[in-house]
Length: 410
Image 1 (cartoon, one colour):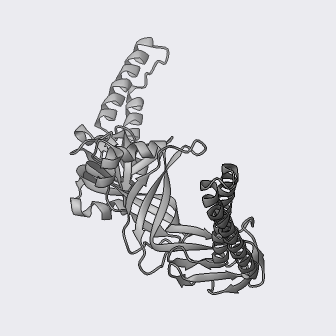
Image 2 (cartoon, rainbow, N blue to C red):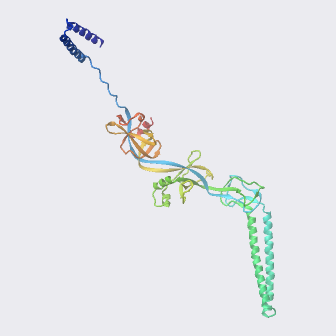
Image 3 (spheres, rainbow, N blue to C red):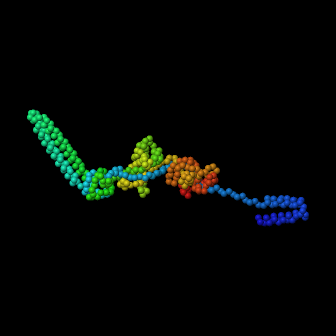
């Protein structure tokens, strides 16, 4: 290139020397010289080598997959509390000193097994006193009966007036009533005496023993002696908000809640250490009304607990399964979130990309379940979406359905 420019310069200089007028004041020569130089310059420029044009960059090659539909199951977890099917407080029915404690904390007891013994001496004395009063009443009734028997023939022979017989019969009725009252007092004393031995009303596990031997106990005590829980089966209580409850009802067939309960799938129990309890449970109760304070409604699931691994007071989470039939599946990593909305990059005509908003109805593993925004058969970009712009052209590289997950992760 430098050699060509040097030759052009020498050639122009030679022409200028040849065309240089002898009379510098001649206008005609000057004009001819200018025209000739312009023609020569144009000719030399047109003969010079042209610069190559800049080439457009090739479109980027990005993995692309087709949106498919399928059956998926999503899971939702709700905090739950666990209670035994029978969970009762053991309280004294009578006051007194706690003489004996027959069980230890956490022990399993059978229904009818003695648990506590309250000092019975005051109540046995009361029973003896009631029995004595009953015997006295029975004796008084016997005397009243003798009086009636004595006066009856005398009145018949008109020896004494009828008034005396009537008075004697009234006294007999009072004596008999005193016997019934005395018997009732005896029964009360016997019941109170029986209350001094506290037995397990149901089979279950003993809770903490808040009163020890020698303590004074009373029915008016704030704290119970202990709690007894039957945990062969446990009830797990959890709550659904109004929106979740509406969606819950819509998932399953049935005209009434009772019908829907019969069609509900089994539920799982996730324990506090995030392990799943070995046995499945079934929802068997829905509360009659929403809690006005929390705006939630309580449901109950029943779980078998033959080994006693679950106890009253445990906490966990109930895991509900929600089936989604013929739902659209999009990898989560193929989406981008902007301003509380989720988008995918769809491949349109001429391999141009377009950003589309999608509506999510759930998540299964690493996939979003899409309610609307795309349709089955649409092509979407799997990765490299962070640098895409609206209308950009790409080179699609189709990805097989069984490799979508692996490509989306990368």
